[in-house]
Amino acid sequence: MAEPQPPAAGAPLTSADLFERACAVLPGGVNSPVRAFGSVGGTPYFVDRGRGAHVWDVEGNRYIDYVQSYGPGILGHAPEAIVRAVAAAAADGTSFGAPTEREVRLANEMCARVPGLEMLRLVSSGTEAAMSAVRLARGATGRDKIIKFAGCYHGHSDSLLAAGGSGVANQGLSGCDGVTPGAVADTVVAPYNVLPEVDEETAAVLVEPVAANMGLVAPAPGFLEGLRAACDRTGALLVFDEVITGFRLARGGATEFYGVRPDLWCFGKVIGGGLPVGAFGGSRALMSHLAPLGGVYQAGTLSGNPLATAAGLATLEALDATAYEQLEASAVRLAAGLEEAFAAAGVDAVVPRVGSLLGLFFGGDTPRNFDEANASVARGLYAPFFGAMLRRGVALAPGPYEAIFVSLAHRAADIDATIAAATQAAAEVAAALS
Image (cartoon, rainbow, N blue to C red):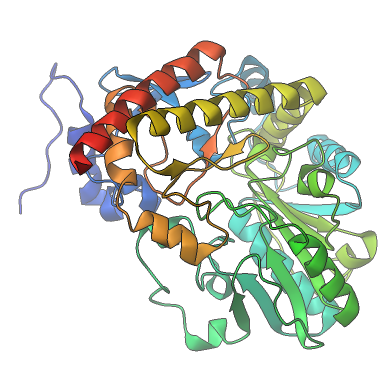
């Protein structure tokens, strides 16, 4: 097979050209599976640049963007405060392998916002944060068993891939080649919104306080409180994976939003302002089990990277009470408009909302767990709706298990344009069904 060739000099660059070239050097042409458009069909658009609520592809097409890098873009793309902060940090050096002041400032800011968070360790991704939190929980309790929930995605470490949502579900995988039975032998998968059996052999119960990797599924009343009580009763540790909800739902994340305090937190996305970052933390006593203070080893050459901490600080500084009010108001307006668009077209769909997070499910009922989310996806309507929206200049995530991310950069005109596009797209879906 001939090697794909770059376009001739002067020829316009297209996403199709780039995808063909990418497939020769990147598995599936992408560096994360959902980007390949496997769930929605077609060729992925290659982004050239972003500004505020919009991205432009290499062909010059502009989209109102609700992917926002799957959550970090809470301020929108390329906000001036982050650009300035990263530029200033880069001028001083991009990595040192030694402590820097910004690491301490970011940790202080996070601990000041989240009730009960006393110490944290910065890492480079949400996957690393969840993996490390599980190791810490096992080391601190001396127990092996972990309970997680079907449809909750906690990154791609071996023991947490079982029954995962998001990218795993988008690929139609029930497991993962290369993950041995031994790696998941101590992982128990329970249905979301049902209290599991937590016993004295359980090291930790790991949960997304709002399940945002199977679409968007809110916790049922009493679910998080029940998990807290079960862990208190048995000595297990409750771990909130707030990689998506952290500093997005509220100033203090899900802990402030729901009033339930876990033992350990995992963070990512917002705290890096678009740069690779993660963190896990908890009480001073629990975190003292980590090396160099204790026997649980965890390390990372790029942890606390100067550019990521600069971007994270700039992001958190912008997230005051007024910002959260604006985010929620935009999300309320968008959710209502989308529901009206589907109703006008006669298409059964629900748009659940928690704070500024939105979901989209086709069918008449709001899912409460992974099985019900899968039933919505099985209707097969997300892909044609996604395509119809993309043709009208609105970019949703290219997979039905992702959330819709509203940013502070989405203005009323963007929301109105999105609703207008959805009205036409829903009508197109309805016409195809008739």
